Image (tube, rainbow, N blue to C red; front, side, top):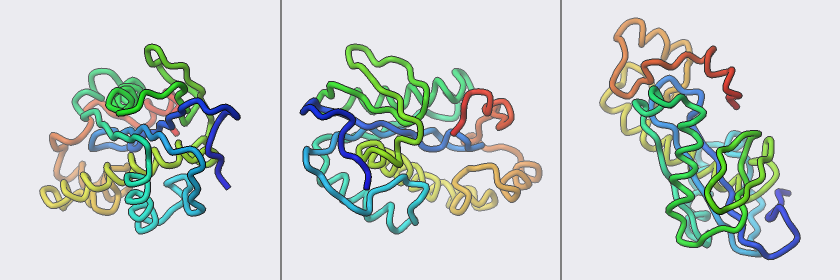
Length: 200
Protein backbone atom coordinates (compact mmCIF):
# COMPACT_ATOMS: atom_id res chain seq x y z
CA UNK A 1 0.00 0.00 0.00
CA UNK A 2 1.20 3.52 -0.73
CA UNK A 3 2.24 5.72 2.16
CA UNK A 4 0.28 8.84 3.05
CA UNK A 5 3.10 10.88 4.51
CA UNK A 6 6.84 11.35 4.17
CA UNK A 7 7.24 12.13 7.86
CA UNK A 8 5.68 10.96 11.10
CA UNK A 9 4.67 14.47 12.10
CA UNK A 10 1.52 16.37 11.23
CA UNK A 11 3.13 18.85 8.86
CA UNK A 12 1.16 19.67 5.72
CA UNK A 13 2.67 17.88 2.72
CA UNK A 14 1.87 18.44 -0.94
CA UNK A 15 2.75 15.84 -3.56
CA UNK A 16 3.72 17.12 -7.00
CA UNK A 17 4.21 15.35 -10.31
CA UNK A 18 4.10 16.08 -14.02
CA UNK A 19 2.79 14.46 -17.20
CA UNK A 20 3.87 14.80 -20.80
CA UNK A 21 7.61 15.35 -20.55
CA UNK A 22 8.43 12.82 -23.25
CA UNK A 23 5.85 14.02 -25.78
CA UNK A 24 6.44 15.58 -29.18
CA UNK A 25 3.24 17.64 -28.97
CA UNK A 26 1.12 19.36 -26.39
CA UNK A 27 1.86 21.16 -23.13
CA UNK A 28 3.53 19.61 -20.12
CA UNK A 29 1.13 19.40 -17.18
CA UNK A 30 1.78 19.25 -13.45
CA UNK A 31 -0.38 18.86 -10.39
CA UNK A 32 0.07 19.50 -6.69
CA UNK A 33 -2.14 17.70 -4.16
CA UNK A 34 -2.59 17.89 -0.40
CA UNK A 35 -4.46 14.88 0.97
CA UNK A 36 -6.19 14.89 4.36
CA UNK A 37 -4.63 13.08 7.31
CA UNK A 38 -5.83 9.49 7.42
CA UNK A 39 -6.81 9.44 3.75
CA UNK A 40 -6.99 5.91 2.38
CA UNK A 41 -7.66 4.65 -1.13
CA UNK A 42 -6.43 1.16 -2.00
CA UNK A 43 -6.78 1.78 -5.75
CA UNK A 44 -4.49 4.80 -5.72
CA UNK A 45 -1.21 4.13 -7.53
CA UNK A 46 1.25 5.48 -10.06
CA UNK A 47 -0.92 6.70 -12.96
CA UNK A 48 1.14 4.68 -15.46
CA UNK A 49 0.06 1.46 -13.72
CA UNK A 50 -3.65 2.23 -14.00
CA UNK A 51 -6.16 1.98 -16.82
CA UNK A 52 -7.75 5.09 -18.27
CA UNK A 53 -11.03 4.20 -16.53
CA UNK A 54 -9.28 3.73 -13.19
CA UNK A 55 -7.47 7.06 -13.54
CA UNK A 56 -10.69 8.92 -14.33
CA UNK A 57 -12.51 7.32 -11.41
CA UNK A 58 -9.65 8.22 -9.07
CA UNK A 59 -9.53 11.76 -10.43
CA UNK A 60 -13.09 12.31 -9.18
CA UNK A 61 -12.20 10.95 -5.74
CA UNK A 62 -9.02 13.03 -5.46
CA UNK A 63 -10.65 16.26 -6.56
CA UNK A 64 -13.48 15.70 -4.07
CA UNK A 65 -11.47 14.49 -1.08
CA UNK A 66 -8.21 16.46 -1.29
CA UNK A 67 -7.67 19.33 1.11
CA UNK A 68 -6.24 21.27 -1.82
CA UNK A 69 -5.25 20.54 -5.40
CA UNK A 70 -4.36 22.39 -8.56
CA UNK A 71 -3.30 21.51 -12.10
CA UNK A 72 -1.15 23.77 -14.27
CA UNK A 73 0.45 23.55 -17.70
CA UNK A 74 3.27 25.07 -19.73
CA UNK A 75 2.80 25.41 -23.49
CA UNK A 76 4.83 23.82 -26.25
CA UNK A 77 6.10 27.26 -27.21
CA UNK A 78 7.40 27.90 -23.72
CA UNK A 79 8.97 24.41 -23.65
CA UNK A 80 10.89 25.37 -26.79
CA UNK A 81 12.18 28.49 -25.05
CA UNK A 82 13.27 27.10 -21.69
CA UNK A 83 13.59 23.30 -22.34
CA UNK A 84 11.39 20.53 -21.03
CA UNK A 85 13.10 20.11 -17.67
CA UNK A 86 12.67 23.76 -16.73
CA UNK A 87 9.14 23.72 -18.15
CA UNK A 88 8.29 20.76 -15.90
CA UNK A 89 9.62 22.62 -12.86
CA UNK A 90 7.68 25.73 -13.89
CA UNK A 91 4.44 23.77 -14.26
CA UNK A 92 4.89 22.32 -10.75
CA UNK A 93 5.60 25.77 -9.34
CA UNK A 94 2.48 27.14 -11.02
CA UNK A 95 0.39 24.33 -9.54
CA UNK A 96 1.85 24.90 -6.05
CA UNK A 97 1.20 28.65 -6.39
CA UNK A 98 -2.55 28.04 -6.60
CA UNK A 99 -3.00 25.66 -3.68
CA UNK A 100 -5.58 27.14 -1.29
CA UNK A 101 -3.64 25.61 1.62
CA UNK A 102 0.05 26.43 1.90
CA UNK A 103 2.11 23.24 2.32
CA UNK A 104 5.01 22.96 4.73
CA UNK A 105 6.83 20.31 2.70
CA UNK A 106 6.80 19.41 -1.00
CA UNK A 107 7.15 15.78 -2.08
CA UNK A 108 8.47 15.77 -5.64
CA UNK A 109 8.44 12.77 -7.94
CA UNK A 110 11.88 12.23 -9.47
CA UNK A 111 15.42 13.18 -8.56
CA UNK A 112 15.55 16.87 -9.47
CA UNK A 113 13.56 20.01 -8.67
CA UNK A 114 14.01 23.75 -8.67
CA UNK A 115 13.56 25.01 -5.11
CA UNK A 116 10.18 26.59 -4.47
CA UNK A 117 10.54 29.81 -2.45
CA UNK A 118 9.88 29.37 1.25
CA UNK A 119 8.94 25.67 1.20
CA UNK A 120 11.44 22.81 1.61
CA UNK A 121 11.16 19.80 -0.69
CA UNK A 122 12.13 16.16 -0.90
CA UNK A 123 12.75 14.43 -4.24
CA UNK A 124 11.69 10.79 -4.31
CA UNK A 125 12.60 8.58 -7.27
CA UNK A 126 9.47 6.70 -8.37
CA UNK A 127 7.63 8.55 -5.64
CA UNK A 128 4.33 8.15 -7.50
CA UNK A 129 4.50 4.47 -6.55
CA UNK A 130 5.35 5.18 -2.90
CA UNK A 131 3.42 8.20 -1.60
CA UNK A 132 -0.30 8.74 -2.07
CA UNK A 133 -0.04 12.50 -2.50
CA UNK A 134 2.44 12.09 -5.37
CA UNK A 135 0.33 9.33 -6.93
CA UNK A 136 -2.70 11.61 -6.69
CA UNK A 137 -0.76 14.41 -8.38
CA UNK A 138 0.36 12.06 -11.15
CA UNK A 139 -3.25 11.04 -11.80
CA UNK A 140 -4.53 14.61 -11.95
CA UNK A 141 -1.70 15.74 -14.23
CA UNK A 142 -2.19 12.75 -16.52
CA UNK A 143 -5.99 12.90 -16.76
CA UNK A 144 -6.13 16.66 -17.30
CA UNK A 145 -3.49 16.44 -20.01
CA UNK A 146 -5.15 13.46 -21.70
CA UNK A 147 -8.42 15.37 -21.73
CA UNK A 148 -6.78 18.22 -23.64
CA UNK A 149 -5.13 15.85 -26.13
CA UNK A 150 -8.49 14.17 -26.76
CA UNK A 151 -9.94 17.60 -27.57
CA UNK A 152 -7.03 18.50 -29.85
CA UNK A 153 -7.48 15.20 -31.67
CA UNK A 154 -10.78 16.53 -33.01
CA UNK A 155 -8.85 19.30 -34.78
CA UNK A 156 -5.90 17.16 -35.87
CA UNK A 157 -7.09 13.54 -36.20
CA UNK A 158 -4.22 12.59 -38.52
CA UNK A 159 -1.75 12.56 -35.61
CA UNK A 160 -3.68 10.04 -33.50
CA UNK A 161 -3.49 12.08 -30.31
CA UNK A 162 -6.56 10.29 -28.96
CA UNK A 163 -4.33 7.22 -28.67
CA UNK A 164 -0.73 8.39 -28.38
CA UNK A 165 -1.47 11.63 -26.46
CA UNK A 166 1.43 13.29 -28.26
CA UNK A 167 4.07 10.69 -27.42
CA UNK A 168 6.57 9.69 -30.15
CA UNK A 169 4.91 6.54 -31.47
CA UNK A 170 5.78 5.37 -34.98
CA UNK A 171 2.35 6.50 -36.17
CA UNK A 172 2.84 9.98 -34.70
CA UNK A 173 6.33 10.37 -36.16
CA UNK A 174 5.14 9.23 -39.59
CA UNK A 175 2.25 11.71 -39.44
CA UNK A 176 4.71 14.53 -38.74
CA UNK A 177 6.77 13.48 -41.76
CA UNK A 178 3.65 13.45 -43.92
CA UNK A 179 1.71 16.47 -42.61
CA UNK A 180 4.36 18.54 -40.84
CA UNK A 181 4.08 20.06 -37.39
CA UNK A 182 1.15 21.91 -35.86
CA UNK A 183 1.21 24.86 -33.47
CA UNK A 184 0.90 22.28 -30.70
CA UNK A 185 4.15 20.53 -31.58
CA UNK A 186 7.38 21.25 -29.72
CA UNK A 187 9.45 22.63 -32.58
CA UNK A 188 12.87 22.20 -30.97
CA UNK A 189 12.02 18.96 -29.19
CA UNK A 190 14.20 15.93 -29.84
CA UNK A 191 13.66 12.97 -27.56
CA UNK A 192 17.32 11.90 -27.78
CA UNK A 193 18.40 15.34 -26.54
CA UNK A 194 15.80 15.45 -23.78
CA UNK A 195 17.02 12.11 -22.42
CA UNK A 196 20.07 13.97 -21.20
CA UNK A 197 17.73 16.01 -19.00
CA UNK A 198 16.75 12.91 -16.98
CA UNK A 199 13.43 12.21 -18.64
CA UNK A 200 11.33 9.72 -16.72
